[in-house]
Length: 404
Ligand code: CTP
Image (cartoon, rainbow, N blue to C red; front, top):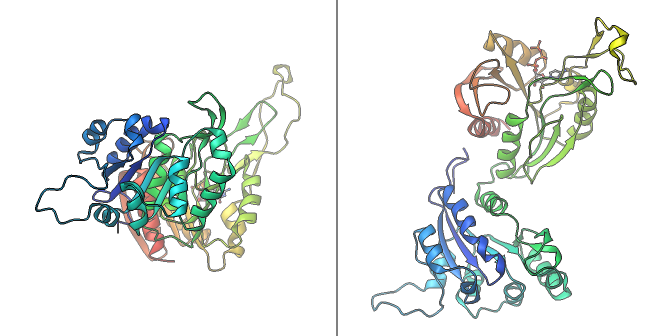
């Protein structure tokens, strides 16, 4: 299986089945997305798929022969049974688009062409991306077939809704290639965090002064989002509690949006029950206006200062609820990284802390990379320099995994 560090899908194999729907025109983009991850892609097309996309395009993009026939002309020395070889070679069978007809055949166990034989013979996970006219999709026969396939453990990526190529509006659009590739990637990933429930806080908090102004910080939620994505890929159940950010969290996470430090505290308390791990990646405000003004402060009010009061420290407040859960904090520091992180680790009762340098190029808020140090009560675990947040996220999860 692939590496738990999450970087390496090279050498994994996807058998990519294309069936005959108009959305097959998106297949080359799906192939490119899979290839960009280093995945070896072998395309199997049904006869009707050839009306919508050419084998030559797919052969060129995959660098592999495209399979179309159940009984091809065989060289005299050939000894592999093609549909069995393909079925065995796959780490995943992906079918996009999957037509109503193809799913009906699968539900009925019919194997009358190469692709239907491959799906019947494989022991690899199968991901179907249905795409068709809305009335075909909503037809009881299709609904029933999809139910049957789901019960058999076939993974279904629901179609998107919108304007369809046939002119109708509704459900039936093939999801965008990036979404299909992400779903395929998740199914291939090693599930070393399966059965583990993680709460991740992300982003800044906003402390309102009046209906127009607020106090916040430079956090964008990128580091937290990278942890959320990595944990989801590795099979964890992930709940995100996020301050206001302009970021799309992983489609597999459950997301709760909050605004202030006080709301984040309440949400953490509510969602902590049953969690195995808490990762506090949020940059929580330490101070909030002492008095919120319900009406806008006007220029003429001649305001010279805003009185502030401390916010609750979330980690310190929930310390008594910790039990056996594993708590990870973050520390944003401009100096004395290790010393400050060590004292936060102990005062907040943490099992691990990730201290990152802020206020310099290539690290901290808004950057794609981070520099800093990871500490546990036993000492320094790791120093990292301008590491991609995605890679750092997997590294942090690797360290946690060794300890829970
Ligand atoms: N944190 C928290 N509640 C707060 C402030 C911070 O739970 N009100 C958490 C953060 O999510 C982070 C850790 O505490 O995991 C350290 O946050 P940081 O801002 O680095 O430190 P502070 O405790 O706020 O101390 P200081 O700002 O003085 O460095």
